[in-house]
Image 1 (cartoon, rainbow, N blue to C red):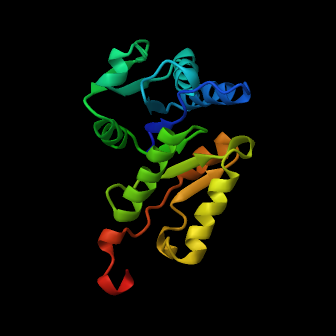
Image 2 (spheres, rainbow, N blue to C red):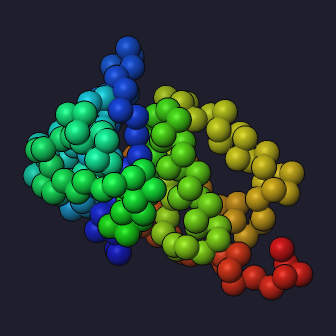
Length: 196
C-alpha cells in the first residue's frame, strides 16, 4: 500500500453478544500489522477497540492509542500500546487521528464511531484532508448507512465530485487495496462559488 504507513481505525468500545465483531476487530489489527501498517485508534482496552489493539500488537505491529483525559482517568486506557497519547478533549483526539494517520477505516461501532466516520468524510469534502476514508461493511452491518449515503448523493446533498469519498467493501483486503490506490477528489475549498 504505497503511501499508507498508518491508518486511523474507528470502532466500538462495546463488546456485542455476537462474537464475530470482536473477532473481526482482532483480525483487522493482525492484517494491518502483517501489511506493515500502523494502527491509530481510540486507546481503549475494551470491546472492539481492545481486540483491534491486541490483534495488531500480537502480530508485531505499531499501535498508537489516543484517549481523552476523562477516559484515561476512568482506567479505560490501554497501556500496552506502542504509544499512548492522552489528550484533553474528544476534539483533540479526532484531530490527532487525522494528523497521525494516512487514512481512515471504520469497523462496526456505535454513536462515537459514527461521529468519527462522518467527520472524516466531512473534512475530506471540505479539503481539510485528502486521505482515503474506508468503511468495512462486514456482515452487512452498514447496509442501511450505505443506502442512506447513496440516497444523500442521489438527492443532491452530496456533490458528484464527493460521492466516491466513502470507500465501502465487505472484506478487509479489497478495502485496503482500494485505499492504497486512493486518488484525491476536488474539495469544496477548491471549487468556484457557482459550482457550489
